[in-house]
Each structure stands twice: as C-alpha cells, then as structure tokens.
Length: 499
Ligand code: ADP
Ligand code: MG
Image 1 (spheres, rainbow, N blue to C red):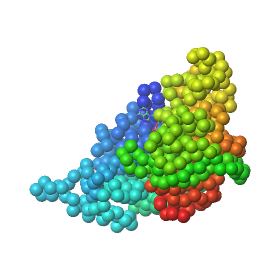
Image 2: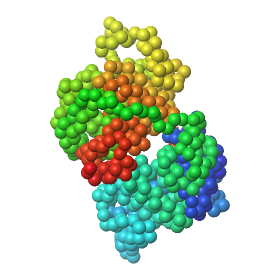
Image 3: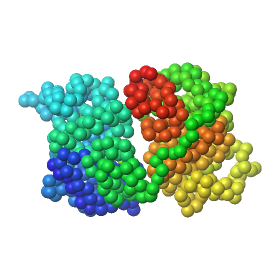
C-alpha cells in the first residue's frame, strides 16, 4: 500500500509542530524520517495513527482519501505502529499480548488462544523470528519484545509500518537484526516509515530520506548522502560531527570505586558489586543499554543513593554515604541525565540557575541577601563563554531550547573547582550543534586534568569521548575496554557476554 500525507499541519497552542508536511511512502520501501528532537516526527506519526487530529491536510492510502477518528480506525485501515516504549503487558505471554485489544473468541465465547499461538508461529516462520508464543513477555530481551510488537502489528495486517526511534533501547547487534527485519518486511511489500536521528542507521537502511526541521520538510536526500550533508540538512548549518581529541595523558588515580552495591527502592539490586577507577586527565565512559544500572551508579556517586555499600573514594576521601552537599563540596560536578527534572529550575532565571548549588560562602550571597549585580555580571560572562543563545540572563530557563538548557547546566558545574565531573547522558535530546559544543567542553575538562565519567547509551558518543569504556549489564560491569574498542566488541558486552 502506498501512503501519502499532504499538507499536514498540527498545532499545539501557538506552536506549529507540523507545518504543511508532505510525505509519500511507497509500497515496499523503507522511508527514513530524519530530524532532530522536537522536529515534529512523532507528532506526524500520531496524526497518521489516528491519535491526533490535524488542523489541515489529508492522508491518502493508495490514492484514496481517508480519515481516522481514532487509533482503531487507523489500524483497521492497515497502519501499524511499533512504539519505542512497548505497549506490551509484561505478565502476559506473547500470544496473549497478540490478541489483546483484538480478542477473537471461539464458539461459546472463550478466548481463542490457540489461534493466536498459531498466528505467532506463522508470522515468526515467515520472517525467521525466534519467538515462542508461550513465553512471558517479561522474560524476553528487549529486541525480542520489539519483535512481538512487530508480530502484533502484522497480525492486524498492517500494510504501513511505522517505527518511531526503535533502536534507542537496542544493543548494536539487536539494531543490526532490526535492520534485516525491516528490509525483509519491505521486500514482502510493507511500506516502512523509519524514524530516527541517527545518521548511521539512515545511511544503512534507507531507500529514501525525508528531513524535517522545526515542523517543516527541509529536504529529501539519497542514502548516498554523507553524514555531514545529512547533519547540515537537519540542523540548518554546517556542523562538526566529531570532536578533535588528543590521546589522553592520564595521571594518578583520582576516583576509586570498590565493591559498590546500590539498591533500588523496591529492594532489588540495581548496581551489583561494581569496582573501577578513574585517573586524572582521562574520560571513562560507562556504556550499556538503558536500564542496566548506569543511572543508579551515577546517582550513588553523587550521594543520591543512601544505603549503598562498598566504597567510593575521591582523592583519598570517602564519599560513600555522604549527602549531596558534601559530595559537591568535595569537588564533584554533575550533569544529570534528566536536566529539566534534576538539573534546573524552569521557573528560575538563567542567572539564578547558574548559582543553584552555590549558596554557602560564595560571592553571590552577602549578609543573607543575594548580590544581584555580581550574579548578573557572572551570568553574562558564562552565557557568552558557553554560547547560551538567549536575549537576557533574566530569561526563565524553562523557555530555552534543550541544547541551551544543557549549556546552562554545564556552565554552572564547570564554574566550580572540580576534582571529578560526572556527566550522565550529556547530549540526550539536544541539537547537533549543541552536541558539538558539549563534547568540546568535556574534552577540554579532561585536558585540564580533571577526571571525567561520561554515562551514555549512545555508542557514537562513547566512541567520540571515551579513553576507556566500562560496559554495564544487569547492574554489573561486564568489561572495561579501551576507548577504541569496536562496536561489535561493545555490543557483545552490552548483551551480557563477559570480556
Ligand atoms: P520529535 O518526535 O521530532 O522529537 P515531536 O513531534 O515529539 O518531535 O514534537 C514536536 C514539537 O511539538 C515539540 O516542540 C514538542 O514539544 C511539541 N509537542 C509534541 N507533543 C505535544 C503535545 N501533546 N502538547 C504540546 N506540545 C507538544
Ligand atoms: Mg519523537
């Protein structure tokens, strides 16, 4: 089935998330929708899947105009979605998940689980998936859960299949497998929309590429386009994709973590007896698929996980079970993975955010009052130094773009005397131009002799920054390898193979 979107416009209040978008996807092709975070890709797909109603524009299937009052109607018309956050019920089996929402009953009104099982087997056999209809979804690795989502869509006879950022949760190997699956689906006649912001994936699998920026289609590209060409289309100016970086000249060991164990609030072990060290002047990356204990590890280093056991020593001083204030005072800088939640106060100004963790005994506070003039001058210097695009330091941080918000966090953390920088997902959801800036500052911090930990699920980021890489899997560090380890090597570790 051929899909055509014509002039789709979707507004949220004053924001035009989709501005007269045209997109045509042919039967049997993989069409990549490429764009930075916030470009409007998911919104467009939500319009297509009947979740949102567009203000303007039309949807055509094989040349026929269609309208969807809701997701059910879109599904019946042959539109299938593979969501990033799977919509599966973990305590149900694969077969049970497949019939969910589409329950067929046998004569007498009982659920026809047998038919669902057979459907799973048939579709699995057709595409060479190894999926057991009776397995509990919870027991399956993420890549297999994604296959269940695909089977579910195919079981409803989807002719157009939309994958919205499907690789974010996958290991490199699972990503490769998904590419093969998408190719097979296309060859069987399915029209595929593949949404991503990762250039590598686009160039690997796309038949055609449409690039969107700020709600508009800004161009079409061929899969033969270079990374720099695609990036400049996405961003609207030329960008440097890899930061120039000299080999590290590591000094003494600064941070020593030994046998660290961290529990989650439910009592499960989140970080399991982890040991590593970071030397002055080196970047240690903590890699792994999202959810393997990296977040908890970073939080434990910051004193946000009381009750952890083992030891954390920075320059000979124990930080285990210290509160956050003492950890910051010991010279630890922190870029949290969720900047809007933990890094900034949206309703505060840029200037106020720049002094958030510096209230005691510093130049901005005298006799219990804020020295506004000194603070504004400091803030103006930082805004210039860190290239924060804003009219004024009195602007509320909540109004800045993600990239500019992240620069405010970085400006604040790097303005203290640091003995260690912990940066968690430092470029998540920010524009390519800001990524370039953040990476340069992190490398500069290392070059100034500060030990740096970068926690990242993006392998390209790990490769760009790391001098050494520790890979986490199910709470454990399964291997520590050199910064130039191959994707294959890292991928195996990320899937739990030990080195
Ligand atoms: P992408 O998927 O390309 O990252 P989205 O389609 O999610 O982008 O978002 C496009 C823009 O629309 C963003 O500025 C986002 O904040 C905004 N947006 C998305 N969904 C909503 C919503 N339900 N309400 C208000 N604004 C939204
Ligand atoms: Mg999206």
